Image 1 (tube, rainbow, N blue to C red):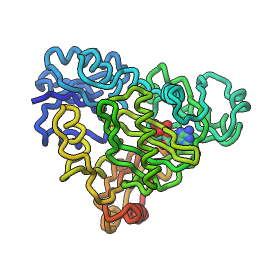
Image 2: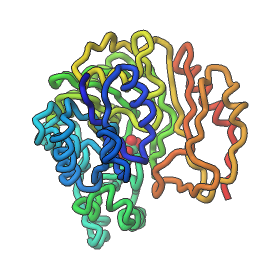
Image 3: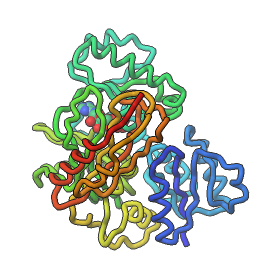
Image 4: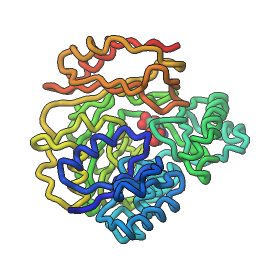
Length: 411
Ligand code: ADP
């Protein structure tokens, strides 16, 4: 039985779905997490605490663990573990993407450099230090632009600015986000004092879920994002698959994503890519060496009911993948946006929302009593609404009706 190290930080939504898939496959799983358990030494190597904030230390910890519990493969379930996995895999000579490729997915300025150098459509970009005076840059830029931290996620700190004054305000806001201990830990000290500024790319945004095998990208699903993402903040809401884009556009998206992966040096495993399409072509906005985040993977089912997690684990251990075909129904998810900051006092209307035709489930992931923070400072969702049905338009409409039935009391 192969032994798989699954890297799952405590704040990940994905532990249960990966664990279910592993149990189904009968794989021996070790969970590597940022939570250290005093019982670790007693649990027979089923968990290992790792330093997620310092990928090199985390990789050394994996190397030490593997001396007593040999590993066959490492799977990082989200961004936080990708670099640790790559470094540990290199030391243990396990198959994985090259470290330099994964580094480029974890550093948005390096990503821009590599994509531009490979001749992919790219916006102008440059990097400021958080200690810089933003005025000289503000006066020299061609607007609109987007400011973003180098290594945060879920659109946190991503702000569009349309003129110099808005730029100066946005810069201060991104710097304030980057000043928190928790954001510094997520970015890593090296990247936390920098802000990427890039040209705003207009167009239609899609999200591609794919699997690389020897550098070839197989598209597992292409999601439309039917809500406009024009800024100034970029809150993810609805994802619906299959895409309603013309076939030629879908092909262009897939080709561009594959070229982007090649430019970074990614060759194996899951890819989650955001791209924008406009009259000039397809632009890669972000490329991540992991699968889709949150609980969104629950929209996907392959062959006769295989989950995305099962498909990825099968790929990771080199087992047969019986089908890469997504089940034919349209499917969608709404990441429930945070309407206002404060304390979540109550949620009503869940049963009504779940009763909307085509709605499969409504999951509220924030607990009543917790502090909630909207974008650009926050990075969480109130929850997820899932729908499945005949076509993407009907699925999208069902998600909107279900959302309209929900009431959030925020004090
Ligand atoms: P994160 O990794 O935090 O999600 P991204 O770089 O993917 O950050 O940006 C989040 C969202 O912001 C994108 O999905 C897109 O909607 C928007 N965005 C980011 N950069 C640009 C850009 N240069 N032009 C237009 N929109 C952008």
